Image 1 (cartoon, rainbow, N blue to C red):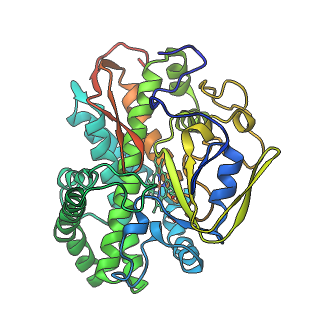
Image 2: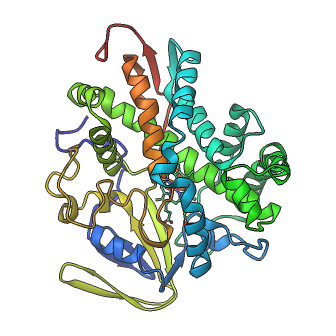
Length: 401
Ligand code: HEM
């Protein structure tokens, strides 16, 4: 580990940490938290440009997919699904999460890879909320993971910097898992719910008149946005907690509020999604301290979450230190911009934190030892970290006993 004031593990070599606002042709790099928030809240002047949204043909859908829509229809879409993800509602899933965590920990007893366990766990929990309960979880998890197997791209270039061969590969690697998900996961779930609606997201989408293609793309969005990100965070949080005995002891005896404060601080330090992108379609001003710049229509805004979450103006001194309950000014979330802000802010944040806490408290109480530290990698689609081959062994008589 680096010095005691740099506890961040997912650090990308050569990634600049400043300045707060930087212009590079039509691309603006935004690293100040305050400027980043202004960009993410400029709902009238910008549209979603991340996750290759600008290359996804929209005419195919009768309802635009939530992640890549903008404007009043998107706001309405979000307010309708919000009820599935409100804190009080997701708490209703706690006992099922606990049962799932206990069952997986029994099955993975001995030496196991936490990243594999976390994948099965997050897929099962989210599938429950969404209503994707037709196929065995391990198979659906593989389908979701294969969706991320995309050739690299450069979002600042009109053709994403891909060769025709890479485009063909991207189409194949994106479409094959989607078709498989349709037949194995989504179609059976939709058919069952058309006959007998349930209290889940798919039943809601059917009631709202979504077509089969619309429902399929929402399911892929929830699957990838929710399950895969939370999986990485669980492994990252366990890595921090197991590497810091004082923090681990504190987490194990703390009440819910303090445990959440610890998790919020870990996820601020280690945001899973590294960059968010917006395209300006109207001119607007962005400010950082005394500096004010005017973004022009057509400009691409690259909101750099890692530096924004470590902006000392917003999160105080030693921003790369892990300091739960660090004082932050009004309007700044304890988790920084990890879950975004404004029109696209993640609706799954309460679910992500609750489900992570349920698994982590159960795992850590079983006194795991690190057999092998995880291998850090990077994913192009969400520009986030991946942790793989994180090997743990459950032994009696450790810290939590
Ligand atoms: C640690 C876990 C998670 C992280 C770090 C995360 C992060 C994010 C971020 C940064 C965005 C905003 C994208 C943007 O502004 O362009 C987002 C959007 C979204 N997230 Fe999450 N998320 C997590 C878990 C979840 C969960 C558990 C769900 C639900 C099952 C979920 C569902 C969504 C959806 C549907 C959107 C799109 C919202 C919209 O565009 O209006 N996420 N997430």
